[in-house]
Amino acid sequence: MTSNQPRMTKSERRAAAKAAAAEAAERKRRNQADAGGAAGVAAIAVIVVVFALVRGGETEGTASPSLTTTPAASPTAAAFPPLPAGADPALGEKPVVKAGTGDLTKLKVTTLIEGTGPAAAAGQQITVNYVGVTYKTGEEFDASWTRQQPFDFQLGQGGVIPGWDQGLVGVKVGSRVQLDIPSDLAYGDNPGEGRPAGALRFVVDLLAVQ
Image (tube, rainbow, N blue to C red; front, side):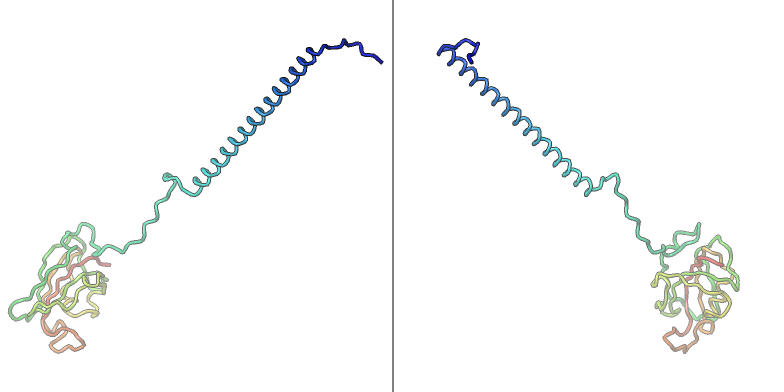
């Protein structure tokens, strides 16, 4: 069986071979370029994904300042002393109490600061701050200020020395009074149990009545 196609000359065959080789080389170049481009795109995609994951991890681990919450304030101790409304600011400072002079034979109440609250009556529960010293020497033996805690008691019911039960009746809330108490209305001349003997001087702040 014979071919209908004409035979090519030698030079024509060489030209055709060169063209075929050039076409094959072009196809190979295009294939490599396409593969390189795909690889480049894939590499970029990987970088983007990794970057997103890293940023996501940082975002998750680090709270935004606008989303942080302020820790709840820890409870603080109640203010001392607990002054009544409208009280003289001087009641917020411990008074300096000095010794008395002469012989003390009867109870003496001296108002140092006049309060404006209700007057204390026998039978009421009252709250006070106080400093106690011996009348003759001025040596301090007791003070609620040292404990940073006011003292509560029922007035006129014998729970404290008679000089307090008598001397604080009628004193207004917000007042500071000085009580000069003779020995017989205090602990006596030989009280024992570490209590001070003889006449005493107290400076008392009346903080509340109930």
